[in-house]
Image 1 (tube, rainbow, N blue to C red):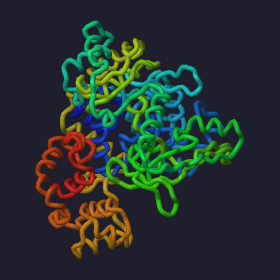
Image 2 (image 1 turned 90 degrees about the horizontal axis):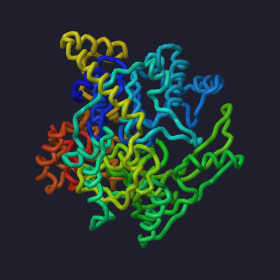
Image 3 (image 1 turned 45 degrees about the vertical axis):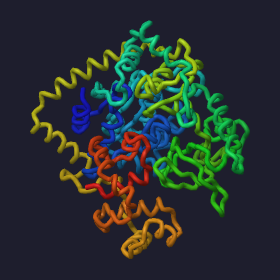
Image 4 (image 1 turned 180 degrees about the vertical axis):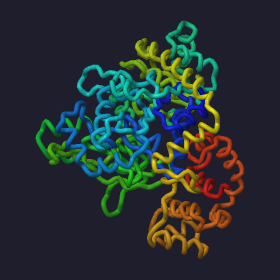
Length: 555
């Protein structure tokens, strides 16, 4: 099935399981659907099974969204308590479309709990309370995580999945790997036909010489290896080290349970120049669990780290709380800076990334899918640098091999049915669903949620200074805010026609102005307004702020 067909099926309002190989365009298709909904005045709930996955789609974890937190089972009392929370109730009741990404890592129990919460809050016994559910993922990738040491069943094994009866959309396009030999290796792993010829391709990537290895992402299966690399890289930085100690309140056992699930270390030591990752969700502050960046300084007043994210924003990382609640009361709490070092990351946290090159050690792989996820992060064999590989790294879950054939057959059947629908009838289905969601049949000029409407004097001050001829740097100095914040203001003002695009060109420096056609060409070729894919296509030649400026003046 193509991305276009899957996108069209989503628009009809049916429940969907969107799957396909790594690099097939699942996230692209979902982003496209989100833009479509927003253009019709519908704001979907965008969630994922993990924080790092939520980062890739600009959402939050399904555990946070539904209010189930770290629970693995729900009692009647738990269900009532969650449903009685006004912010949970309001969030679920105003939702028409719920997207859950990386469904492979969501257990049978968790999907069932989300189903129960939605039914209870919406007082509707239809699956998930009548929401349109879009499940996204690939079961060949990482399986559900078991916190209790037992075996978790896949989400498709739950009764909630059966009741939902999603239409299977299996995308067969490939947009990440362009190396035929490498594709043959990945396809062989996926089909269970991995043989000596494929093994030979992998073995050739062992112990390859590599220069400037510090600039290449390192993937490991165990946290101990990640911690070793990160500690060594921090030691190399000569600037002064700052340390932040975790504070804790509550019974020892409960505190220990929180610490186990908290990615931030008890003592977080960091220096200017360190590569870091946020470890908690805070959409209002502009980050989620998995947001990457570098330490660029420490706040003069608070002393807390200031992080420059990959897209050029500056965020002060203030301490946050991790808690355990019971009967509406906080029983235990730990407080720490929501960061950790990130020169190296685990394979679990790499899921969803696309890398030109990666150094990886698969000798410690211990579960199905880990090796496949790591290998499929890179685009071609020449970008793969293996330090080690065990037999388990080249295995996928045997149950998934059989289930995958079932998914493919269901997708083919769904496609055959879909192509028989006339364009007139399809449009009618689209319109009926938009109306049922309370949306507008006529597309709006600006997508809801993409550009926030400027309000208050802060935007007016930036506008006045811009109109007086000031540069971004001068406005930032005058207003005592960052250049990134000024640029965000100007982007919003341009989107609302308070600043004409032709006038905005004035703040672009001549060197960047000369290459605008080149940058714009990539935006058009990729058919996107997202910075990440363009930055990747241009191999980091231009900064994210440069790309933001280019996008801002693009017709």
